[in-house]
Structure formats: C-alpha cells, structure tokens
Amino acid sequence: MKQLRIGLVGDRDDNITAHRAIPHALELAARATGKNVEGIWLATERIGQTRLDSFDGLWCIPATPYRSTEGALQAITHARRNAQPFLGTCGGFQHALLEYARNVLGWSDAEHAEEVPHASRAVISPLACALRDTLERVRLTPGSRVAEAYGAEDAFEGYFCGYGLNPTFREALTQGPLRVSAQDPAGAVRAVELDDHPFFIATLFQPERAALIGRLPPLVHAFVNACQENAR
Image (tube, rainbow, N blue to C red; front, side):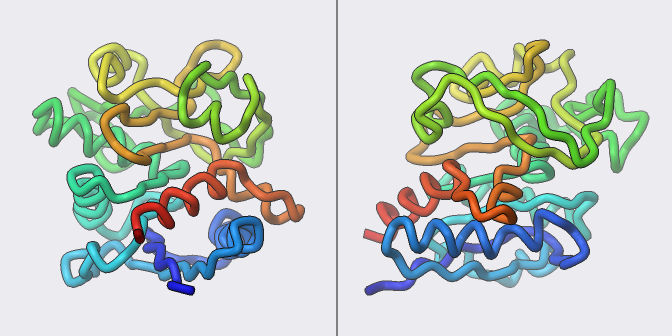
C-alpha cells in the first residue's frame, strides 16, 4: 500500500494543543480509511527548499505568527494552483484568506493584523471576542464540501484564536469561487472552500482537537480521502 505523505505547514511546538492533536487525527483517519498516512512537519522558513509536489496533500496548521509568512503563503499558493488537496485550520484559515486576497484578487497590500496592526487593508483582523479554548456551534452551508464531510447542518468545534476574517472584506473575498461554508450563530465566517478545486477547505476552528478525546474529525477524514484520490 502506498504511503500518503501529508505536509504539515507550520512551526511545530508540542506545547500547542492543536500540534499535539494533529498526529492523533491523522492516525484516526488512517484507521478509518485503511490507508497508510504519514504527516511530515514542514517549518515555514524552509518551504522554499521543499519539494511541495512530493506530498499528496498540504495541511496549514495553527499557531501564528509563523516564522515565515511568505513560506506559508508559498505552500498555500502551490496547493491552490496545482489542485493539491489542502486543509487549513486556524492560522491556516487566516493565511488561506490572505493568500487569496493577494494572489487572486490582486490586493498586494492585504495584510494580517497580527503582523501589521495598522494596515489599511487588514483582511485578517482581531475578533470582537477572542476564542480561547472555546467550544462553539457552527452552522454548515448546505451543499458545501464541509457539510458533506460532517453529514449534518451544524457542528460543535473547538477554537484557540484571536483573529478572523475582517467583515469589511467579506463580500469581496467570498463572492466566488471562494465560498463561505460555515458560520457562527451570529453569521461570522468560520470556514471557506474553493469551488474550482478538488479539495481546498480552511476553518477558523480546530477540528483536529476532537482527536484528543478519541473522536475522528470529519474534515480530516475527508481530507485524507482527497489525498488518496490525488495520489492516484
């Protein structure tokens, strides 16, 4: 059986809950799918020296600021342009939006407020209320890949973040082909996906956290299946 190689784009720190959860999430997905899955940590400052096409999928992981924003964006660009399965969680969600703003919409001045607090076009801005070790209900968009993965209309997911999509730029960013696929009860964007891509999903929440209590995260399951399809 071919081993699936999944690149974990981020700066590993086992003190971070999500980073401890990710190997467990991949292990649970491997058991559920019967596939041999290896997660390989890719430090952001070394992305330029990494053969990204040697991976069956890329997962841009939590914990920002990354040591190299440009490295993370390079990996996301590669996945988006090459139809490579992509999952972004928390910081990966934020940087997927930043990459799209810069490289699809052409907003060269798009920034992340965590790194450039007073940017005129901060597409990622502080949340009105930081979500620190919080469990929150999310409403899934009917017909979306996210809803299909969960097989439900809503879900409860964990967070540890202080930044999200700036509402000022929501309409321009998500009018297509990037679509909103989950929202919180107040309507704030919690997940997006690309229509014209085999699997490109990014969530502000951290679905991998479920693995720490032995529950298979539906999105990680779906992502691993997409990586298998790509490997073929």
